[in-house]
Length: 381
Image 1 (cartoon, one colour):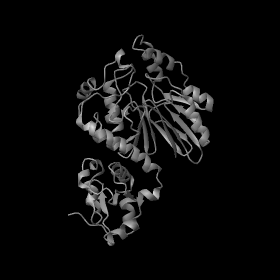
Image 2 (cartoon, helix red, strand yellow; image 1 turned 90 degrees about the vertical axis):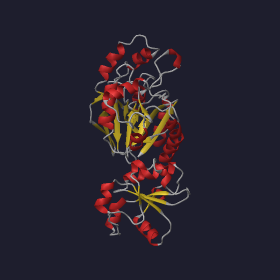
Image 3 (tube, rainbow, N blue to C red; image 1 turned 120 degrees about the vertical axis):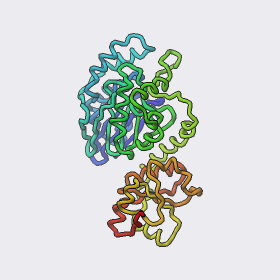
């Protein structure tokens, strides 16, 4: 996969493309066309779609202009005409009305519905309607990545007090549409003002101020009322997701989250053989008693069903960050993490690298590969 993130003062945009066929898509472009065009040309890409996850109120979309230059089609959600009707009723809201009016003139070549799919070479993009920030908001699922626009932002959600916004819809989008998805998904939002690059859905479920506390829909709507700064002329510019909640925990997680983001990008860019340990090598290290710290990140029931590798410590993947004190004090300690197939443990390895464990590796093929080789497992009592 070819992938590139663009950051314009906290507004994030993306290019994703198929490595084999060089076909791609641009997501939420804004501010300056040149960086997008330069990347497309430098990588020899053919752009099929330019997609806006929703009608933006804080910046003007460049989707039609880029589509014209690149021979692509612009794509938005089927509810965009309704969102534009709502925007047309706004006449005086600190300049927002001007941006809405300009975006309302942007051409749309293709409207997509919930769960509709687009293909770019070997990559499938699945649209998930996630209303709340706007009526026409959608997230885009692409393999192990999800582009969440202004619905799920790192550490919080998008504000719901703008034209077309709804706290009730945001609750349903977060808890009924996004929360059931895999913890392993890498989250790429449309905004971040804290220097973060990405997150994972599992991390957000545990640490996101909007997700980590169980709330009824009514409690959630009340909570959001105090989460964002008021819309007023003194803010200087509109920010679609900026939490003002004082929290010692969020202050502690800030540097860690940034490290986690950088670690994830590094992990994805590092040659696979440097971040994985083969079953044969782990088996040999155990027999030689080479001091490897082994962690099973599966759920308890999985351990009961299959057993555990000798010497492994059980820490479910969602608890890795909270139980980091149970890991070796020496950050140079070699660590092997595993799950059923290697997907969840890959993210555990990223967590550990964010904490400074640069020798953390993921067991290739997980417990399935271990069993295929008939290596021993210890049954749980």
